[in-house]
Image 1 (cartoon, rainbow, N blue to C red):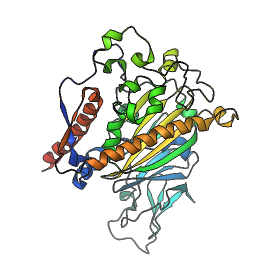
Image 2: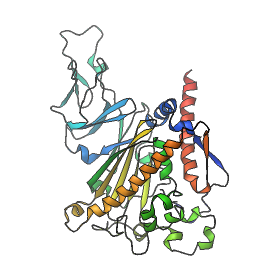
Image 3: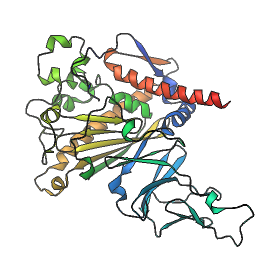
Image 4: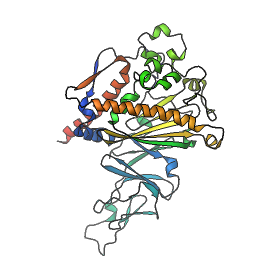
Length: 397
């Protein structure tokens, strides 16, 4: 649920009926493959936080579609990423999902080809080498890596452009005043949802479902209870332009301070936040297709998506707190985590309901309502990336 960044602009809503993506885009295996090739293999994807690779020789593997990447910290402290594939005959290199390398080498478990942590081939155990073979010609396949505010991203495109920072949605909120780099993990939720990855993003980008699906959240954020994300989602917003009550202006209900079961903070408020940031209640930053971050006054929540198939998506949510909050016996972290988990579980459940109806032989596509303007923007983002892949394919013919 991305609040409108423009609180002084005109009406946000769609002014004509717009079609959704075709229903087959959510279950067809060929459509899923096109999503991988056009979107997931060509954009910056969240892997983990730098803190998860805090020490030299630490590594993590990350799988998207058919592709597996190993991200590691070398002996000098630099982060690097490679395809998890040996240059000899294509064997998988690191078999564990995470850990610490036993030496300053990556050694293939099959035929013991060994690579430096910079990716250079340094040892081949064959008794002799064939004519024309040069180890310098066979480094590991490098993968583009970018760090944003302590978050580690990779991009599988050979000509990866930009960085994790530049790939954030321009409509995202500004999280510059949140101390993201120094926050520590307080809880992690992992869940496999039986729905296409796009359904989750569609649900994220509208609040028409909020009154019926998120009753407690709608009480905490009253404008959500009206099925709206921001003031200018209401076609009659001008009638209430001077009314700063939360059901019209957004923000939390009177007396609430953060997203928690009781609406109270459960740790120290981040001192660098502006009064407007504190009053907003939530500030979102989105990096399609794999993640979003939500800044609250006393903690930060991240959500990462990884598609597992055309009708299955892995969700990983992490709650980040100040180091002081995690050791403060008076800080009721569970109060915060329980509320966020409830909201995510409600979202996951309704996304699965959406998925179940999409295979009707009569349902070719849906239609968007005015409040679903951000769904239309997301659909166009998907269409543009599919079109770019098709254009590139045409050039290659």
